[in-house]
Amino acid sequence: MLGLAFSLKYRSAARAFRRALSVLAILATAHHASAQDVPLISGGVGFFTGANAGSTTYMPLIEPLLAAPIGHHVLIESRAALLESFAPNGGDQPGYNHTHFMGLTYLQGDYVALRHFTIVGGDYLIPFNTYNERLSPIWIGDFQDGPLIAALGVFSSGSGLGGMLRGNAIARNKYSIDYAWFYSARSGNEQFSAQRGSGGRASLYLPGQRLEMGLSYDRLLQGTHENFYGAHLWWQPRETAFRLRSEFARGHHAQGYWVEADYRTRAFGGLDSAIGRIEPVFRMQQTFRRDTIVSDGLPLVNTQRADFGLDYNLPHNTRIVTSYARQFSSTGKKNVWETGIVYRFLFPAWKGK
Amino acid sequence: MMMSSKYWLPGVLVLALVSAFALAAQQNGAPATGTSKTANAAKRTVPQSDEGQRIFQQHCSRCHTAPDGFSPRISGTVVRHMRVRASLSQHEEEELLRFFNP
Image (cartoon, rainbow over all chains, first blue to last red; front, top):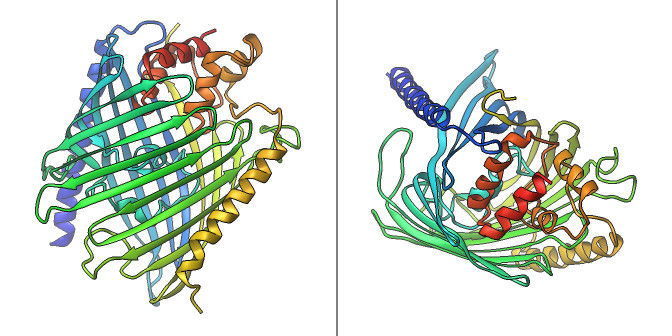
């Protein structure tokens, strides 16, 4: 019974996914693109392995992204995820168990209406803090795992269905301010599931200091109405390949933060030398429960975790991502080992002259 | 034994800040990230002070490493995608497009 339900769900998801891709393809080909505005296909394909407290998984994964401009003001963009996860059967059982997933991460239309004003419609990534919108693609993230607080403020699915206004409010030489404000309707659709809610984010960027700081807020407007608050601070010192990123998020039942630093050296022949391609990464994170109601995806008890990563940026947009994490909580300590390889692709949707 | 949570945050912040300042001090004079062939090509043909390169370094490499290179036929699409995703201003979009197509 469960297998049949899963099969039907999978077939339905596959149908919706194919339909969405067809619409995108038609939109893309219908437009007579100018020399620089050819639709593009990008994304990442990877193979990840992990050992979490002794449980091993193997996961081939592809995340394609399509961006198709229409005219001078419109962009249709979408990202999807297709993965298969393998894990050894427990006990004395030989062989592997496997599950698969295929779904749209987002599918949105952007209309650049005015200099400081872009209208977004469709199924979009919720602009709460930075991880969901900026760091979640597999070809960008320094770690295979997202942070523990990634589920706070993004309404379970990570995406909203409705509209968003966003843009650059003020752009000066010494500072700039950008904003995003969204409203999401409730949807039970297989591919476009969303919860009713509203919120946004505002960020201040200081180019001189290479410092970005921002605040996020959103409110769930169905079931028990809950507020989520977020703050982020990013720093990339001038003329270095060092990056410091951090986020704090507070939900109705839990809160937490993460701080991540990564670095590449130019001291031994530049970033493209054998040494310069090495990228040590460190992330520290903590979560705190505010009550015992667990509805947010965070650990059930207060948790501390330190991630030590060593990435290697191979030529041709290929990256090896490895890490070891030690996690502490009152329910016990555990080790998490992860290794993966990701190839990023980026090319025009069709051949040209 | 579990480490007390009150020592984690200050410890991490101090470690991160000390490391960052030390690394920043070592890197005087070197250009910022940008390994893309497009970006490197642009570096060879325009002065270091070029507005587009500055925007590229500040807004694109804040999140991700530059791709090894891409077709000029999709440069407009890339820039429009970045305009929405990184909330670039119209001026920044124009300068970035000029940077990709010097």
